[in-house]
Image 1 (cartoon, helix red, strand yellow):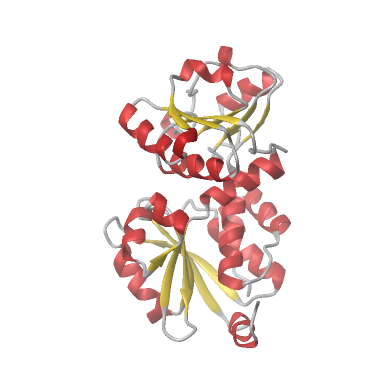
Image 2 (tube, rainbow, N blue to C red; image 1 turned 90 degrees about the vertical axis):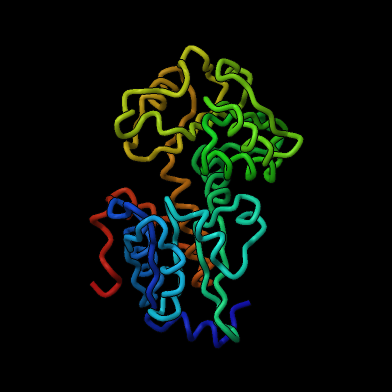
Length: 291
């Protein structure tokens, strides 16, 4: 329950930020500043370039500079997990933090959260009308996003969670997060699964023309989520849709994980429509609430 003291604190001007390297391309300022404007909070969200290895110093600056909330992106998620005062179970299991809440009830405490899994499951349910409960899922890749997906899908009731990755050791580590539901498979088993998640960089940047698996492995009864959102249309999505498959990019996951962070910081329900509209306009829409 929101107390009078916490409500009063939230109506005061406050600063929030995303740390990363690089971070200038981040959509987080656009998304969060739109949310602050929508609910009438005098908060400002900025992108803060923090070089690799300096995450502890950034955390130490939160109280000094009055930073009420922090988003964390690469390459700092593991370093922040080691430096905060406490961790949620998800963040502890993943050894990765993407959201820091600064609690000041009695003395300052920095709490590390991981909202990636929440963002993934919410996007599946709301953007793709896909219920993970009782489903079979294939995750392509074994990095941080894949690890968060394996844990979240297991918690959401998926009955089979497979990981396919070029490095078998990393695949085994990601699959282990799903407990006895997890396994390592070859990519050519893709046709066996209800849901396929691309958690690789294939389809973006220098790999923009590549796909994680052959479209010949797919069929119309499946659902595809490509965690890439820039570009918004990858070859994998195009090929999946050409076969009549319900498919979506990773922008919904980004928005919903940000929405959960917004709620943790402010205790206000996140204005999803405003955040989605800002994200679709890109980083240029990141003006502060006062502008």
